[in-house]
Image 1 (cartoon, rainbow, N blue to C red):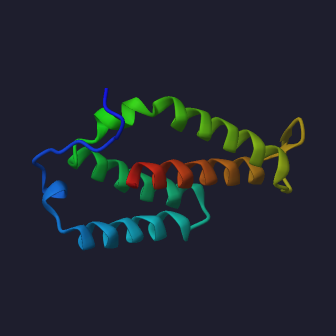
Image 2 (cartoon, rainbow, N blue to C red; image 1 turned 90 degrees about the horizontal axis):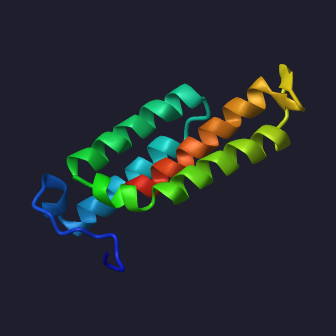
Length: 115
């Protein structure tokens, strides 16, 4: 196992100019960061995961799946307890805080995958 996550493969994404890759990375970040609704963020995340599939990056993502899972769970847990809302669910968690936690977790994981 190498120290770095980069895999030099012959895909469309790997042949792109570095400036184009940076522009696509910025667009990916904006696409995920701007919306607040979990469904919209989920749709943007799905596009980023599709892009990762086209780049054949699943092998690298499998190497950091523990990090992605832990980050997701902790983000949802913390924001569900900290963020406020009007519709109570259980143990101080509201529907709105849970939705915010899910959207935030999707944003963080999507940005890591896009990178």
